[in-house]
Every structure is written in structure tokens, then in C-alpha cells.
Image 1: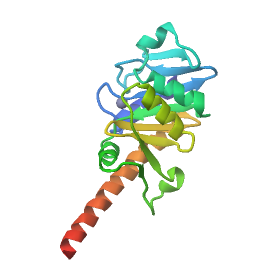
Image 2: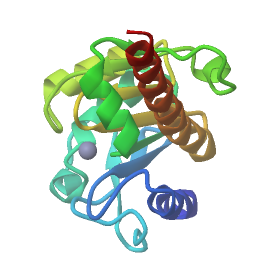
Image 3: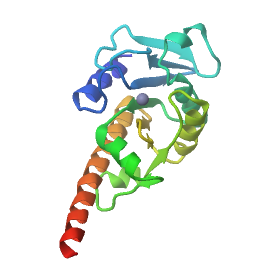
Length: 187
Ligand SMILES: [Zn+2]
């Protein structure tokens, strides 16, 4: 629980989410610990709920609205932690691109290779299915026009992925902007 509280604060401090958005979870055996609905990620003390992974429970209603997505990812991948943010450059890039974000010559590209862009409404079955499918082969994804999901074998690794997605998207945004400027100059 302490890890989720610690990294929840880092997610907010580093601008990877704002206000009451985003959610975090960690696998503990057949259960998951997840932030409660409407909680702020830098104030998670007393706001973390423990629910089963493989069945629904009476506490589902106070868990994050993205609980179905977290459950589906834990059911289909071996990851131990899932972090969801709304970082700006990742959302912008997901609206400018349709399939994957790929950036050559970037240090973090080595770890992430490519970042798929997926679709689906908040907490929907479609989003849960698309996220679980893409995260079988990738550590992180971007939900089109919405936000980021980072996963890992620890909360720390999931945080590395979440912040790396934003880092890569920020670089790509500025590189593409410079390319556009160069193209215009040539014309
Ligand atoms: Zn969200």
C-alpha cells in the first residue's frame, strides 16, 4: 500500500495526471489493491481498496471506475502493478497518431520499443479487452484522447513506463514540430 501512496505522489508531482483523475493498483496474490473512485493520487492515504481479481465484490463500487480494466490486465498478463495517468503530450500524440508511437534514437525507446494507441470508453469492456491484449506484448499503452497506462513487475517499474511514455511523446512532439518548420522553410 505504501508503494502506491509513494508513487501516486510522484505521478502528480511530475505532471502525469491532474486533479481527481488517474488510478493506481498493485497485485497481491488473487487480489488487487486499487485507488478508490474520485481519489486524488497525491492523497491516497486511507483511499486504497482491496478487491478480488477473478470475481466481483461489494467493494467494487468504491474502487476506481477503471477497475474492470485493471482486472482484465491482471487476468491476462503477469504484471504486478498498473498505473494510469493523463499526461498532456501522450494525449496530444494519441490524437495526432492512429496506431503506435515509435521514436528512434531515444534512450527509453530501447525499453518500450513502441507504444500502442488503443481505444475504448472509461472502464468499458472494450477498453479492458484492448488494454489487456496490447499489454501482453508491451509495457505501456496510450488510450486515444484520454491517457496512459504503464505496467511492470513492480510499482516502480510501472512508474518508469508511465513517465517514459510522456518523455517519448514530448520529444516526438517537438521533433515533429521542428520537422514541419524545416519543411516549410524548404518550400
Ligand atoms: Zn483516465
